[in-house]
Length: 384
Image 1 (spheres, helix red, strand yellow):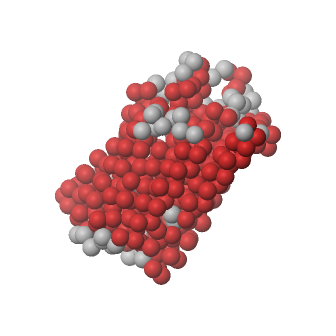
Image 2: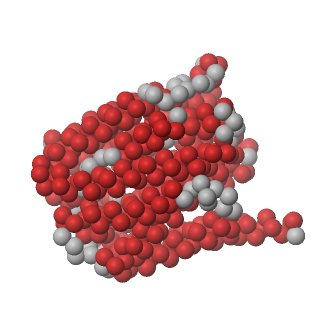
Image 3: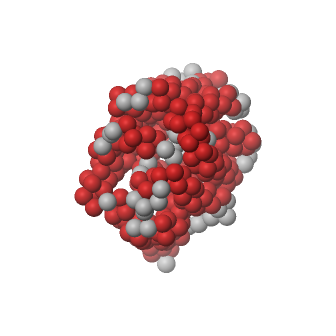
């Protein structure tokens, strides 16, 4: 399963449109507010479909959702480059949001339960960290290739390569093992949804893990969409933007690869990690030059590491009933926070620039770090 997972993660992120689609929107004539509205629409689609799709994954085949989703994204990417306009971009993001909802929860649940069936559930964080790293290597490769392909064939060539990657992702997803008991698939969508939500209500540790996933993942994931604008604001030529983005995503890739050694990092250690990353993000954003990008790369690496660790904590606290549903609940929380980030980012960046906006969004991570540190101290007092 590991090879299938790594290959799936690589192809899923080997999309040459990733480093340049914000530039495509801008070149089509969209304003920063219009671009941010597209991101909001993307997240709203996830909000509406996240939990229902998770319940569907618990009630039926998770593998089915994993190969169906990339086909939707392929259609969206084709629309972007064939008929570039605000409404084509909007429809593409709706399809992309639906694809994200289909895979969110389904992938984590499938991987964890297959490992648990083999008696290797303690390797989940390491395996998912490596898979995330494989995806980030793909992002890095797409950034390296996006510039030359864009120069040779324009956005049409970049879009064609992205559609091909989506079709490859769907093909690989059909190779995932799925050994769930037939009774699980007969439970029904509503029963799976009720079971998952009941588990969240009944267990305080599950609720805390759900909140942690959203807090760690949302801001980092939203800022990802604006990194091309941050890099371009440093004054480099537009054709150099994909290459400088390589630095940022190299940092994120390193964070994914460190997940195994960091799997035993406690709550206090995770709090320190987030605090240091937040300071690096603020300093890198305010630098206003390419010299600040290594700090942004360092921050993204720490956030990537923290997001995998937060997901592993959640999976450890869920029993087999409603696993995909609860993972999707965490995705729902992430989407809701992400929508807020998009709107706030547009207002902040329009008034003060992209660098200042990146620095402002270091604050939520400092708050999360403080909350984790306080929780760790509170747990130590009774034992003392």
